[in-house]
Image 1 (tube, rainbow, N blue to C red):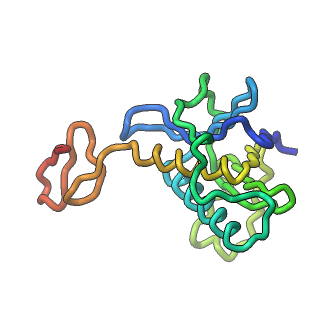
Image 2 (image 1 turned 120 degrees about the horizontal axis):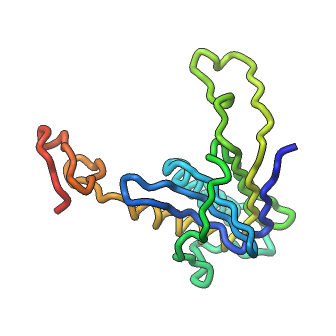
Amino acid sequence: MPLVHSFDPPERFVTGTVGAPGSRTFFLQARSGARIVSVAVEKQQVAALAERVDELLDEVMASEPSSTVVPAVAPFDLVDSEPLDQPIEEEFRAGTMTLSWDPRDERVVIEVFPFSEAAVVAPDQLEESIVEPEPEEVLLVRLSPGYARAFVQRSGQVLEAGRPACPFCGNPIDVDGHLCVRANGFKRRDP
């Protein structure tokens, strides 16, 4: 039986980073009272989760008769721009994440499972029956639609706060510049 870090609902559920742009570590962090759970995630996982939460809420808005109002944008009073809560102690590194809508209590349900080498499937293993081991722990968060929209908004801001993009090739520019393929290998600096 896995250890379930359950937040139903959390007082706070946000994406945040530690480190300078270019070498940031991304976290999902949930808090209720003095209990804080921080899970390390990849930048692409944050982008995919935020995009999918936004799409899920749009689908619910369009199709579900609901007693709860699903806001089209994050309610102003739920916007969270504060830094991650301290101390930041990584519980685990995220692997698989699941997302669903619970129509009974009208909540977005996010489950984050630890990364596992056993879950990595090589192309030549696609036809094989693979049994994924039971995870040791899981982060389970249930969010109201307003808090879910606020999570999406903050995630977008965190993702955009990284290194600026090169105006020529679109790749990120490091503090000391980067070799731009569009400029035939000349080093470009942020203008």
